[in-house]
Length: 452
Image 1 (cartoon, rainbow, N blue to C red):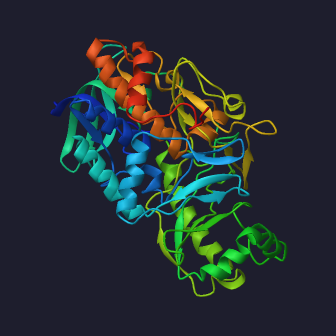
Image 2 (image 1 turned 45 degrees about the horizontal axis):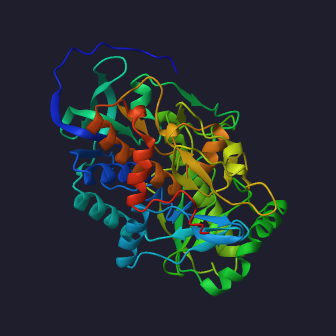
């Protein structure tokens, strides 16, 4: 498409507020950053483009927390704690939490939950922590105080354009928007050569759970038979179809979204996002009849909900002093500046399939630590970057992008923000020992819950 330009007249932008901590993005990393910062007494605002928080876990229809648990020497344990424990308790009090279930050939636990309960629990967590929440505001740019410091985040909403000034910023946008606009270096894997493919989640109701469970592990085989016979074509080979809070309802993660040349949809390109939304719903339409006709337990089932947006797994990765790597994941690395842990394997959504790479060794520890340096961008001195856009290699991000480590990164950033502001320090210069002590006081574990 030919790019045309027009010149807009200069304008004055209203300042919507001034805060000590400004958090962009209400995904799992952003909500924990905002809650942690506000609980230190810092005036904190969370800016979210939708009317609720939760990120891929709500808008993306994910409905499962991955990465809260690890397979520690053969024993399944919850390894991410702190504010995550409080959130789980809040969801459970609303009747929205399942017992953890085994995933990926029964090698690791994941945690299913009810999306509506998740939204309400996050509302309560943020409000009771003292966070100011601004919904329905889309970030569109930044204003810089100088080449190293962000002065304000620019947003557009139904109320028009506005600026939110801050002393310290946390980028939990998923795409690294704020940090990239401010000049922080980043990497982005070429969509044609490895960028993780997005998916569109949907929910199925009216399932005969007992009959469906009997064939759950045979789904790839049934799909292969149907495809070989020419009855269906599937966008990817490895489906994830599981029961939810009520066993009548199942979650389906079976789509894979691509451009006409086969490359992954790029979540920073609005035209590709538009294509992905249309393609995802077409795939739901085309694939679901297979379940009704050929999978026991689904004969009377129907699609009750398609997620409000496609689930983006990878776009920009901000480059910090250290990039968490695949070797760090597979070798269960420790770091002197640890801020939490991650137990999820490398989960690479490649063309037509999902590749899982597990921690190395006969009896691996099953988790790696997350270094503070991965949430500190280069160039910027008053900004942290958390979530899937933190400083990771492509393969490292294929593991640590999931919810559990995002919770850990967010809580660390919100706590570090208070330390930086208290000491008048650059974001990367806080005393890591003090940060670790504060996190430990708030229930964070760095040892995977191991004892002895």
